[in-house]
Amino acid sequence: MNEKAGEPAVQVVSLYQKQPAIQVRSVEGWYANWRRALVVLTQLVFYGMPWLLWNGRQAMLFDLAARRFYIGPLVLYPQDFIYLTGLLVVCAYSLFFFTAIGGRLWCGYACPQTVYTEMFMGVERRLEGDRSARLRLDASPWNLDKLLRRGGKHAVWLLIALWTGFSFVGYFTPIRALWAEAFTLDFGPWEWFWVNFYALATYGNAGFMREQVCKYMCPYARFQSAMFDRDTLIIGYDTHRGEPRGPRGRKNSAAQRQLGSCIDCSLCVQVCPTGIDIRKGLQYECIGCAACIDACNNVMDKVGEPRGLIRYSTENAIERGWTEARIWRRLLRPRVLVYGVVLVLISGLVLGSIALRKPFKVDVLRDRSSLARLVEQGRIENVYRLQLMNVTESPQHYRIRAEGLDGLTVASQTEYEVESVGARWVAVRVQVPPQTAAALAPGAHPIRFVIERIAATPAESLSEKSTFVLPR
Image 1: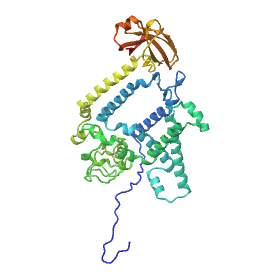
Image 2: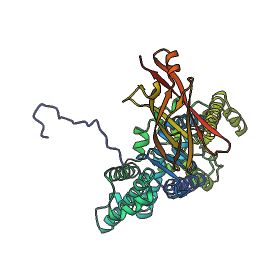
Image 3: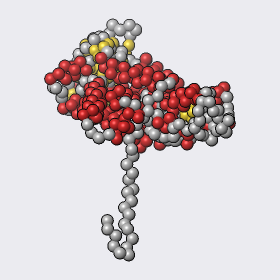
Image 4: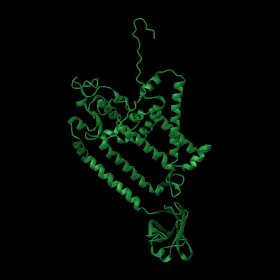
């Protein structure tokens, strides 16, 4: 812009600063091996579980159309929603418990964002090289080599993402039927939507957004401070030992140069997937992956210093120089014990209720078209609709009877067969004799239906409450 005489130059200041892409350096070490092992384990479970069979059916299937959920030997119905509530409560207290002890262990090792980012970065390193090679590739002009490397990387990313979306839908649609449909692209509209939606989410989050998800989108980073305290295990830098930092060779000891153990190599920053400097203290962006520990330990080995300049410890332990024994004693503090006791109790209640649940369920509905009517011999009749749900893997026979009023009888069929893992609606007519009707006031009177499983050992029955209406 040309400046006019006597007028100051106009300076445009942008309030948005584009963040450069973080190119993470590869690292080897004990924690890196753990991360890779958990990537393999979690994906074997996620990709492999839909293909497992149990009694000739898919072992893990949430069949929304049939309203049945198969989890190994368990067959759950929408009426079993309470178990999902219990599972969510167990997960919440597990999060509180393990976070209070070890910080963001979930984020660093098992979170899907971490797992898929690790997978995508592995493909990136394989096709584009390590950090320095990728930085050179970023700065180089477009040519055939760069096009092939970048294009190949994105092609593999898309294949992983599509397979991930396909596997996700395989938990809700039988995956073997879905696999057959994949060859003819004969998916239904919802299958098309969710395969592509989940694939796009995986491709975008793990391929492009990466640390932005952890830093800005994940709520866990924001409320972790409510679960952390100064005795929570975190990844910490030992300032007393490391400062003042400065470069030196293996032959020059830190004492000779009056320096701390940190040689200021910045490898701990280069291996961090969120791009932070752990030497600045605990930061909410740290996901606890421990890559900086492996990098620092490798450097300490090379310069002849003891390991542990960056390590898993607590803020109190680093500041006060506590021993490992004292750290572990402080981990079992009241907060952790309360979380642990509550977690064990809730887990026991959920598992116990699942183990003791009946192998069949019954829903009772009144026939709204006819609340009460007068039938032969002056008897009063109510009609009900019962849904018999068999949650076992074999056909079952059931007998229905009604109780609660004198002379109350079931005037319709009383025995029914329900197929394995099936549900059946039956119409049940219940009657009372005229003398009972005369002795009772008009209106609704409580009764109950008792449903018995025939030929069951031991005998099993289920009772459901309802009402019998007497007309005015």
